Length: 445
Image 1 (tube, rainbow, N blue to C red):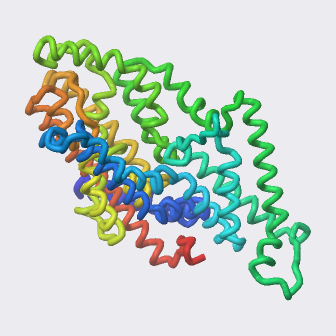
Image 2 (tube, rainbow, N blue to C red):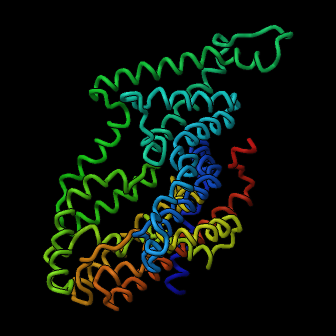
Image 3 (cartoon, rainbow, N blue to C red):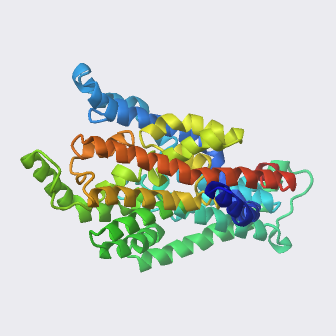
């Protein structure tokens, strides 16, 4: 029996039953279906990110490759054509998720799903940072606000659904009253209780955080421990692991750690670039271990090295919906844009894909670091646009060293091989659920 066969057998024995049970759990189901329902909008947003950052940004990979900025004056101005699509999709994703999770949960509990979803959106804005000088920040309406939206959706979905079934809180209207009016009065008192309750909670949190609120608490808790890390390979690996772990919980990992990451490595990156420019080579750069190692080897396709997952799905998956998502995501994935994968499959709270999403980037980081340590490649000293296709990043980052490209290709191949058994396990888990007649789709509840 081959190693791959043994691995598949072990995963089928251990992971598939766990995944089957978790996917049938109503909270996991509500979250999963919420992200799946947003897929068309996240896909539209991802395509606009691709267009604006690869073609219409003078420093984008293709624009820079064909000197598009020289051919079209003021190229960046044309980003304004497509940027509004982002404002109507990815940049308000947290609002969609707050509504859908509460609505899905209410539906599974037999409560009023529409009014529960609307109440969740209301609570989301009750807990939202107040306007400053009349301006409301959009920072937490998009991916950075997903974790709070997820928690609000679950809490409102549970609490309001249960309160709405309490006879003493129900206002019954005469039969002559139109159904729509009777429906709203039936759940009126529970909605008032929930919204006022969260408003009181928000007031208390503002007092505790000196006006910051729940979002400040979340990001302070996540960022402060990272400031204690140094610039060793272990520190870089921990930061990469935390970034991807946050994505799994619905938090925008790269944005969350950006302040700490940039502060920690900005000086080292600048020193490496200055050294390479002065000496004409990256060999001997003074700070070999920086975040650029992660970008060079661990972020192919975006966080979690999801380009490897896309390829693994196209090769090994037998599920049509997975293959369709992979086909739509391969274009953006080549340029390290992966919202369609993270929210479409989804990766968020996926009991099977959590493991390789965390594991693959660390494996690739160690491969890249090992190649640098034994002098196969020099340090990644040159700045590379983030939309550069995966294996080309170490090639350009090392100053055009062919072994940088080779190591990059090896990392991509390894990512496909590691993801492959998990793709197969995902297929088997889905088939098992179908065979057992488990209905985990909140749409049909």
